[in-house]
Image (cartoon, rainbow, N blue to C red; front, side, top):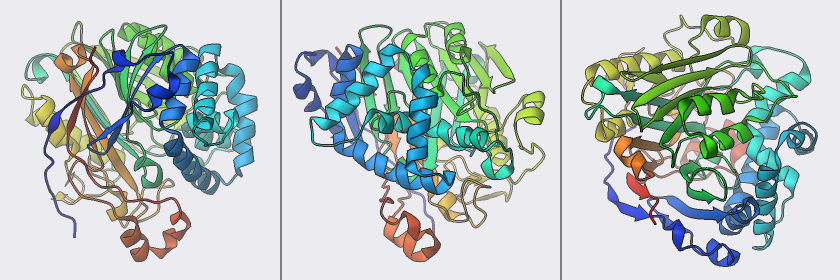
Length: 461
């Protein structure tokens, strides 16, 4: 029986990156702190220094993520690990600019300093895992069918103007993924690079980008995204999405900058609907970034929501298998719920409302309160339907963590985050596997995912 509970807020946690001495790399790794289910890691310096600090601080966690991905990617992609390593070397690496090559190499070296061994190609697979399968594997197999279509990940909204309580932007997002990886998606990075803007983001150990792409930079750009569901398309000559996403987080000073950086060299991998806000002028935008079709909408009085549905009719026709007329699909049911919440809360949307949205269990198709793949707080593990080709019935996947920020918080490079389901329902791996023995292939990688309280993280000097 599913139940609801409520999370309490903890005091603000200061990241304190400025206290770090770049010349003392091993000292930096000791500065990681843990609170509310999150690991806080400050990074600063040159690309290689940032990478070394990252790898040294999170060596054991990176090892756990790699072991999980090896199981998931070889199972879902029907390819062995060497296939993905070859793709990392031959397809991805040639398009990675030197700054991020140095950072990735630094991660490998930092982890090695703590006794954890993997190489650059493993690290590139980790960083590009979301675009290697199914986007690259489908291109490699030279076929397009629903069995290879992109999964549906994440729920998000951004609002501004008359829709929010103070007229400034509010941005919220929860990450949806397999629990084997998602239970490990618990890093708060505060990055002060030698070039570009300082930024704060959530992330997965070993990745130079957020991966679910929630972050705020020192120029006031606030970023989130949701995957375009049922998408098909990949250009092997393009720049990896993981590199473009990191570069945009680090270097964008405006919405125009962000759109340009994401579109330049677009390879179609991990195709997303990007929700962006500029806290300096209150403008928000939706960048629907397909491969053939790209749409940028923007406003200073309105909202955009994301739940893995494509909006552009040409994109739907040419690049997806998405059915916009199916009210029972996860993407469409969640979109309907978002629209209802935006209307109900118009003029009252703030951080507290956003936190409630992240825990919402209203199923608009069945018209009842019951957590499933059709609710904003996603629980595929409770669904007898599953999620198309991505997850079978009762597959352990759904919302794994949550982030919220507004314009005022963005000024301070601050965000609220809650690990696990925002509703407070835990996922206990052994219990779920006992009930669903068909999922035993995940036994060695599936771990418990217990909810944590909403915690405020702030980058401070």
